[in-house]
Length: 423
Ligand code: CMC
Image (cartoon, rainbow, N blue to C red; front, side):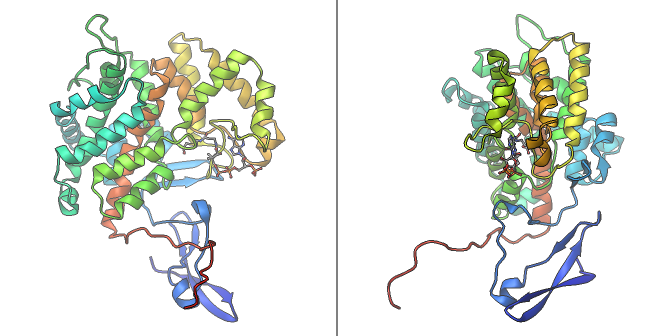
């Protein structure tokens, strides 16, 4: 990008001009790429609190105004009018599919929905009780052994196929992992069902009790998947871009993103929220719990609250909260955890600790309650997040590869022991 303006930086009596880069939504950044060459200085910003690690055309987030857009389209509009697979196409290809492209993409997803039969046996050898996120990231990594066309050129040429394989097959693997964990026979994908209906059917159909797919369940799952589909440079996407910059194959790259997502401060939070709500419901002491999360000497946090970028509200949480209430009402489900969640939110939003730190409910605060209502077990919540985030990760990998990005290799400030040897 060509800078239209420059900022002046004075270091050691030397003045240098730093190009000012302006994004399409007016965001400004200083390009410090030449700083070390010109001055000997590096910049330091642990946790990337104030560092743009790349240029991107995929997702725009405005944390102050609570805005989230994929490829320029507000997420509220996408949730209202589109299917998850259309949004996946939008993220990966840059525009929504027309009718013909949608049909082709659906066919490709269907053709790639079956897990290689030899891979099915892998599921038998994970220990009982293994977390599905660990199973799934291992299985995704193993895809490179089953579909070994993984040098960069082949992967670039095969991107359509690899995208379909990941988006469709990983959904089948997720349902298989669940079926295995409860000792039931796996259910195969069906091409007559939509992406979300197919997933629900593979999760809950059984030879003895056929699963009746409720349109409301399909609808809300579609919404949840769209809302989680991308979120610009979050921890797992940054992992994907970082690992991918070493030209590692796409499967290994996505598997690494998935591992990053499993952390409790990232995608793992949705499971932790429901565990926290359950704990409060059992012990019945909201006030005591709130004291604990505000105590500097206690590592506990109010899970599902706070966000690195959103400082007024998380637009995803606003949609999920409303949809959660509507869904539970329509399905006539009474979940005591929803009452606890509302109580916690009410207290937090009027407590100076949370107000002064700009801590609001994030995407994970209500999503777990919806998953519970869908019958999805707690240890599968983060898997749901991962399924949704696949198109985002793939889109970022594709964009990063297309930009011929240099290998990611930050610098550091060494603060260890000095060398005593005289040179
Ligand atoms: N409960 C209590 N205090 C909190 C919380 C919370 N959930 N979140 C932040 N704080 C406090 C924190 O202790 C710090 O206080 P002080 O300034 O007195 O030291 C201040 O707020 C700033 O927190 P931070 O950890 O420096 O903020 P961050 O931007 O590094 O972290 C976060 C963002 C999401 C990791 C954090 O808010 C958090 O741990 N939230 C709970 C976990 C969670 O819900 N994660 C899901 C995030 S959204 C989905 C996703 O991206 O995966």
